Structures are given as structure tokens and as C-alpha cells.
Amino acid sequence: MTISMSKLDILLGLVPDLELNADGTWPLLGTFDSAKRGSPGVARAHGIPVTWYSVSQPVSSHLSFIPDTNILSSTFLIIRAQASPSEMLNDSRPVDSEEPAAQRISQNTRDEDYYFEDGNVVLLAQDRLFRVHRSLFERNSAFFSTLFSLPQGDGTCEGIIEDSPIVCQDNAEDIQALCWLIYSSPGDICAQKNPDTIDIPKLISAGCVSHKYEFLTFRDWVLDVMDEFLATHPDKLIPKCGRWDRVRSILILTTTCKRENLSQRIQSDWIRRIALNESNAFTGALRAAEACVDLRNFHGRVYYAHMKATQNISAKNTEPIDIGDVGTYTEETITKLTEQQRSRFCQGYRSLMSLRPRLTKPPALEDNPTCSVHARECISAWNSWWGRVNTDAWDRDAVEMMEEIKAKLKKDAASHSSLYGSYGRPPPCEDLIRAQAQQMVESFFNGLPDRFLIP
Image (cartoon, rainbow, N blue to C red):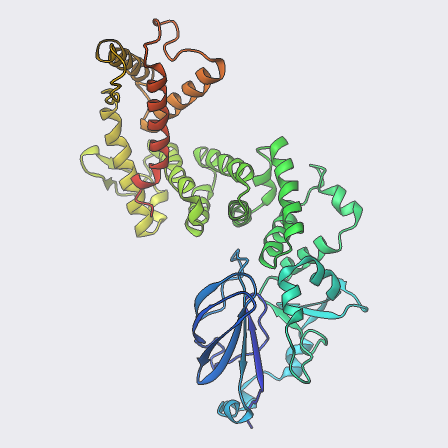
């Protein structure tokens, strides 16, 4: 006896409970050409004609796997593989080799809070069934609105009955958090405004899954609540997360959604905790930075913060790492990193340590042909100012020295003071000097990831 099907729907994020390969893995579906939103593209998968739809934005994809459930993406593909019964009968797997459908269904349990008898859509996440109201999902999510608008084949009951639910490739807790967001009572909402009752883990799950399924209004509300909480309690969000993977999820979400202030607050507190050498803060931050290209600058700061926190520690039974003419570096944590991470760490350490001696010499000041005393007064003033900065930072590394210059520039600009303070009258080219110093600081920090060979 063989398995036959006339239609197969695969949706990134929503995948029917169907095994295509005998070993239980998803097959290579083939290469799919770009298609405009809502318009079909055509390919062949295992000899079967495939029609697919992009429901979010133009994409081009080689779909060979179902993506990780932690991925934060607003792009989804709906793939409908249509085949004749004779094509599907080519599958020679005996039914006895698979778990009976009735047994699989019996293992699923109804969610205690979000299985409504009057619901008209059934979702399955892991082994948890949710019966919810289609109109609420359809009205608030562009993703589900498009999903529910697609034509169904004759006799299709997917999402209508428990035997054929819409399968979500998410943790049950994430779908439960999404339902909590959709069905929230006024009391639930008010509780999130109170720092004593705010549920950060649930908000993170709800925010990430609502972003994934394009519940944009709900996602923005979650980010607003977290922004308000972090603004008044800057050191409380990370402890309330409970796990570093949750911090990673909310940081990637805020960065992806261009919530710069919120993202920077999370980054700053994370860097502070790395500097304090909190357990797993460094490796957790590396995972977050490596997962999001928009966190490149954060990536460089993570390595530097750990370098500063541990460079004077010598762990027992740990061989020192040779980093060229700078010397050696001995620290237990980096022995647990990947080869690439170790290479980046050591390269950054060597680059920054060798840079500091070179900063004792003032950088060349740009020429100003319109200034008649540029060589005599302006360059001399610039060299004197740089010398004072270098003297004040004699025991600081290159990053700390640049941070001091940045702070001084900001303070002087806010108070409309001269860079030279009481050391003498400002030179004619003070604006040029200030602009060059500002540009130098920005270039340094933008280039910090380069010193760790971060792509």
C-alpha cells in the first residue's frame, strides 16, 4: 500500500505535518526564480510541477530546508506542489513504516487557554493544538490574510479540523504568547506597564513571533513597552530575560525593526556586563552579533569589552597565545571559542595594542589654504592639544583614548567652549580642528570591527 496525495502545501513558518522522505527529512525542492508579490513562479521538485507564491516581498531562493524556528524574517514562501495521483504513487514507502495518523493526532493536546470551541482555525505547534478565530488573525496579520485568501483544493480541510491543522514550526510557548497578545485583556496590558509585573520573556516571544507573522501593530506595541521599561530601568531588562538567547532575540528584533534607541540601550547594558565578566555574557553576545549583519559595530565592541575584562587574567593549565611582537595573551575563555573567533580575538588584540604607541604622535592636520597663519599657529595649536590629550590618557589604550576625545568634543560643543579651554586663545582653524577630530573618532569606531577581521 502506498501514500498518495493530490496536493502538498509547504509554508515557511507553517508546514503541514507530512514527511516527504523515508528518513523523515524534507527534500530538496529545487531552485525557485524570483516572483513578484502574489504572482506565481514555477519550478519542478522531484519531477513534480511546483507553483509557489511570495506573500511578502520579491525573493529568489534555493529552498532546501525548513528554516530554524528562531529566524526573524518577514519573508515567507507558500509552495504548492501539485501532482497527479500516478506521480504521487511513485512513493513506494509502506504505510506500516510510518506512525499511524490517528496515533499522531491522539498525541496532540488542546491548549488550556487558547482552544476556543467557537474558533474556526486550528493551529498546531509541537504537540499543542490552538483553535482560534480566523477574523482576528486575518485582520491583524498581512501574512495570515494572504494565507487565508489563497484558493483551497476540493475537499481540503486544512486548518478547519483537528485532524488537519495548520502546522506552525514554532515552539508551543511562542504561539501561546502570540495568542496572549491577540486576546489580551485590559488587565494584561496594564500589567506590562508596571515594572513589578511586566513579563519580559513573554513579551520577547510575542514580539518575535508577531514580527515573523507580520502582526506589525502588536509587534510595535511590544517594542514600545520594552523601550519605556528600559528607559527608566536601564539595568533591569537583561536580568528579567532570564536567558541570553532571549536577550539575543530581542536585540536582533529591535535592530531589524530599526528601533535604534532601544537597540543601543540593550547593546550598552550587554557590553557593560561583558566588562564585568558576567557568566556567558561574552559568548552570548558573539552569537547575537554573528546572527545579524546590522550588529557589526556591536560585534567589534563585544571583542574589545572582553579583551579589557580579561587581559590581565592568567588561567591555570592554559597555554599562552602568541600574538606577534606584542607578546602573549593567556585567558581561559577564548580557548572555548571557535578557531575563527580565536583568530579574530587575537588579531584585534594585536592591532589595538600596536596602535596605541603610534597615537603618541599627532596626526597630520589638514591644510587650509585660506588661513595665512595655518602652519605657524593652527598646526602648532593642534600639536599642543594632541599632546595634552595624550598625556591625560597615558595609561589608557587606543579605544579609551578615542572615547575621551569623543566625550571632550561632545562636552565642548554643548557648552560652546573652546577645545583649548584655558590653555590659550583658539587658533583661526579651530572649526577645522574640531571637525577633523570628530571625523577621526567616528572613523576609528566605525573601523573597530575591521581590527577583529569582522566581515
